[in-house]
Structure formats: C-alpha cells, structure tokens
Length: 314
Image 1 (cartoon, rainbow, N blue to C red):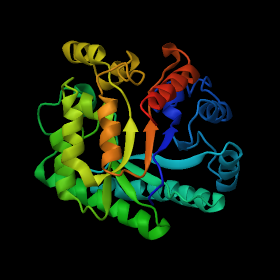
Image 2: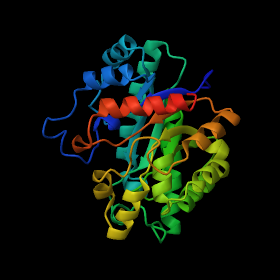
Image 3: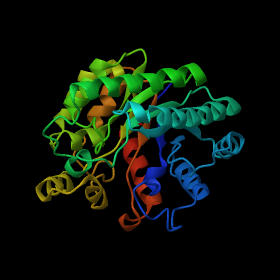
C-alpha cells in the first residue's frame, strides 16, 4: 500500500536484539518497552517486529503499545531454510504465525499501511557465514536455485492468500543470496507479481566484496521496480577490508562494528535518497545498525542516525 511520504522507522536490532548474540540469553537485553520508548523519542515513526518473542506476540497488546507511542508496525524479518524442500513446512508455519500477527495488529490499529513480511535465507550456515563479504563461487546448484525460488514463491503466495500481506525477499550476508549476481539470479527466477526485494544498503555493499559506493546506485537502477522495502544500513570500509584480509566470519565482522552509524561508512545515502524520491518510492526507510553492548548507547546512535536523515531532508 502506497504512502503519501516516505516513512522513517527503526528496528529492534539497533537496540542489540540480534539472534546470534548471547546477551539476550543472559537476561541483559534492553527491555522491549524501553526500546519502543527510545525509538519513538529519537524521532522514528515505525518499527519492525524483530525476533519473535521480543515484542509482545498477542495482537491486542502489541497494537495497544504501538498506538500509545504513535508507532506503525512496518514489517517483520523471517529467516527460512529455503534451499531444502524438507524444511518448507516449518518455514511456512513460522511465516504464517508472524504474518497473522502483523495483519491482526494492522487491523486493530486501523493502519493505512499493510506490513510486509521480509523473507530471508536462514543465515549462520556454511559456507556463506565463514566467507561473507568475499564470496567467490556460487553457493547453490542449478537444482537448489529452482528449489530456493519455488519455496520463496510458495511462502509469499501462502502469506498473501491467508493474510493479504505482501512478501519481499531480504538479501542477507551469511545467506545463500548475498552477492549482486545472486540477488539478480533470485529475481530472475521469481515472479515480480508475487515477491519483491527488500533492498539493504549495508548488506549489499559488504556482500558485493567491494567498498565502492557506486555499486549502490548501480543496484538501484538494476533492481528498480522490484524494490518494495528499504533498509538503511551503513558499512565501515575499514572494518570490511580488515574482515576480508583477516578472513573473519560474518559474526566476527559484526562484533567489530562492520555496520556503523549512518554517514560514517561507504554507503552514499544522499544518492539513495535522491533516487528514491525521483522514482516515487512510497514506503518505509528502516534504519538498521546492528548494535552490541560494547558499541555504546543504542539511544544515542538512533538519535544521531535520525538527525543524519533529517539533514538529508527526511
């Protein structure tokens, strides 16, 4: 559903809610009420759901908490093992559980925006995790590509038929669709009427294996109408280069601050904003900065990131 203007949102990962981090299991995670309060106080209008079980999973409670803060539920990320037919049933169940929650919250709140489901390949598998940012060989066979694309469309169709929500594919480092050519291959194999693309600036640049900012504008033109959702994530060229030189795995790179505050890395955000505006993008920009406890204050980072976007006219 189109919007009158581009909305600016953030996500729980910017407050340290990262599925691979042990902080949550140790009971040290930032409480969800604090996260929502800080997200709103720093000037954002919407949020993504984050990991299942972090925000309330009862629709009326979640809708009430969002309404109290005048926040919109924008989207939800769901990793599924898409390359294996045997894993599809579990992936479908998880996708429908999340999609039903999104749809119910949207209906209760009377929101004009219908949230998106952001489907991604399950990360944390090898070889993509150990070689993230420097993938040199395709990870999927021709047969696996067909299964991957078919399973993605199956999830998207089932979600739409059940809830009326659309699905966009989130390319992601440490998954089997990371590099520019892998993203292009995925889009070639899938129906543009069924599934779109959640374009993530930071994952794209790191996944390209290069620190060249011009690659982002090339991607925007290349994928154009398939882009249904946008994540603003910056990528530190210094950390990216060291990660490639030292052959760090994906999670080690994250812990060293790979995805830095907006404007501190190599992503040309002024170019991205201009492109979105000229092409009439009518959706959300979601700021994502994978912040861990050792990286400072999520609140202050969110505040600086929001000011950076204001300086770009957003």
